[in-house]
Image (tube, helix red, strand yellow):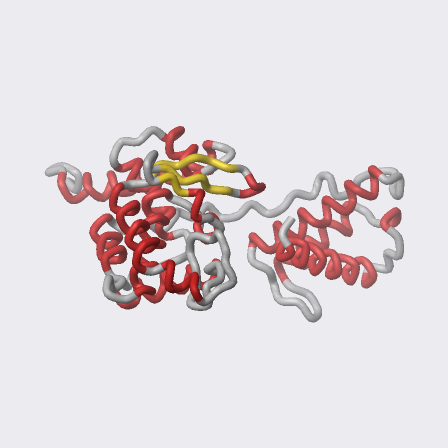
Length: 287
């Protein structure tokens, strides 16, 4: 697991220990399912010294607690797993925010082409939209991960799982411009790295810096729609489905382990169909 994940789990379990101590539980063998359920309630409503957590954060904490009790059972520390039937709260089903094609075009064309950073930023954004990659996947790319001749890129997703994704010609052109006109200047300031996208010091561009590129470019382009690190990924998937792509193909391109995760994008396109129907069909609003 990442350092960030481990830090979060450690914090969650520390809070759990505080909760058990307040209930006079000095040993895991004394803990009951009621204690675990009360912890979940405290996560959602707040308790002394702690504000209520959002659904996602509360779910993560419950997962950490369930893992602790499962481990204690496996090690023979307890006779029964009292957390087995306490399930994380279900997150609200949110529709992804996708930009329309014209807005994406404005975003991609916004970085200045006469500036080394602008050339890099355009290549970065073009690649994000062309492949549907996560920002972390793109900043993790090395130069050799892109095959210009085959027009493909190897992306390393969650759990280190790799997938081969095609790249569109505009993104390849932007990448070539960056590699010829911009990257060498950045690389001269560093100590030598195979990273594809470099910062001003010649080191690998960070995820946060890439996210800032997206946000700042959107502001420069006058885009007022909500922008997140996944905006271009959501737009990529939605536009593919709008264009008639098969759901299973989109699943493979996004690197989703389950098609259920990808199906949320079909809700977006159905909403769009409803809008078109409501404004276009002569009998849509009759009565």
